[in-house]
Length: 86
Image (tube, rainbow, N blue to C red; front, top):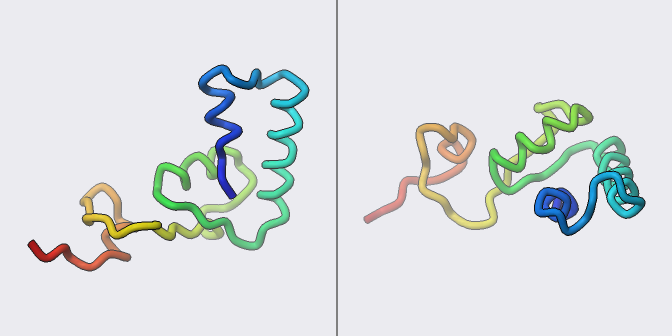
């Protein structure tokens, strides 16, 4: 699931308290509640999902879309990536 509705709200394209904003948020939260697992692309997206308080950290899986260089601050990426050969 993508979280573009949040970005639209943060940039002011959609007002959070408008009918559209409330409907999009309700659909997003309903989807999170009904999922067994939530797949995200990086630890930033994981933290956004965790902030909703609906899905436990153990039910969020990070699956990067592209190879990334391991970073000491990103334990998940470091565990999932092979070292980059230079």
